[in-house]
Image 1 (cartoon, rainbow, N blue to C red):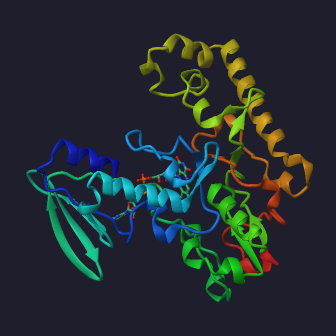
Image 2 (cartoon, protein in one colour):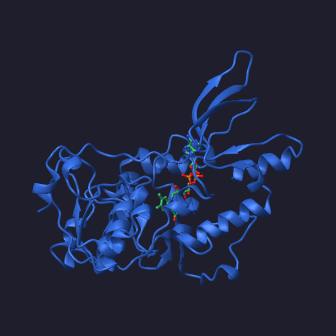
Image 3 (cartoon, rainbow, N blue to C red):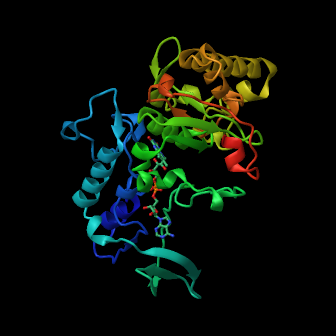
Length: 324
Ligand SMILES: Cc1cc2nc3c(=O)[nH]c(=O)nc-3n(C[C@H](O)[C@H](O)[C@H](O)COP(=O)(O)OP(=O)(O)OC[C@H]3O[C@@H](n4cnc5c(N)ncnc54)[C@H](O)[C@@H]3O)c2cc1C
């Protein structure tokens, strides 16, 4: 939507079409993907377009995460305010994009079971990282007798929050935590299953970190913090000497290692993983230094998880046997 808005502003007379396979705006925050308990990682103020502040009318207070319903409404208002909404064709899935000889693209679009072709001079792809669910092949799942679905579709199975007695959540990162939390707070018994061949539980950070209780989103946007991560484009910021010192000398590396060890220990202590043998299993397996984008913000009440079991289950093993 940001790309469409910018393009429309710069080329007001251009014919712009936004094709979205979903029925409503928002992508991750589209109506069909919302479910009770879904909130943003970010606290108010760090998950909004710079030219469209999320004001008080949304009812979110400073220091609060943003409910999914609010993010959806906000994105819809953005699309309306900047005239993007009128350009969107919903329920239109781009199946293929083929380069035309001499420039431009031909798109095959399916909509309501019909396929059509669309020709365009320019194509912007903004399909997100989470549009295609990854469903592992679980042997026996077709005969399991209970719904087996991806966390992306939790919104469609929202009734199971009331009707289920127990649920197995397979995965150890943010969406798994969200699903486990939603079911546990609805009074459903939750078993989390994290495969041993993966990277283990995600780093879940409280919103405020370090002994100085700094707001994480703001902290990661300070230049100082970026120096602690090696980056192939790092020298472009003009601070190559400092980066080379941190990552290219023994003393520098020691400082970097110490920094990440302190930060990691801080998160482990703040989350209180070691206070219970079950929560201990959710302690990250990877070094904080290597986390990259797999960090998430813990904006729910961690001890609410009723029962968390870690089973070393491989994707091909039988779901029913192991879950019991
Ligand atoms: C549950 C959840 C919570 C998150 N919370 C946060 C958060 O708090 N803070 C944060 O920074 N990030 C968060 N993220 C990451 C999130 O992905 C981004 O913040 C942001 O929503 C991504 O926007 P996007 O436009 O790149 O992609 P998306 O929001 O995924 O939008 C992609 C769009 O492309 C459409 N599309 C995909 N394929 C096709 C196709 N073939 N044809 C037509 N249309 C197609 C989809 O329907 C969708 O509308 C979260 C992600 C998830 C899943």
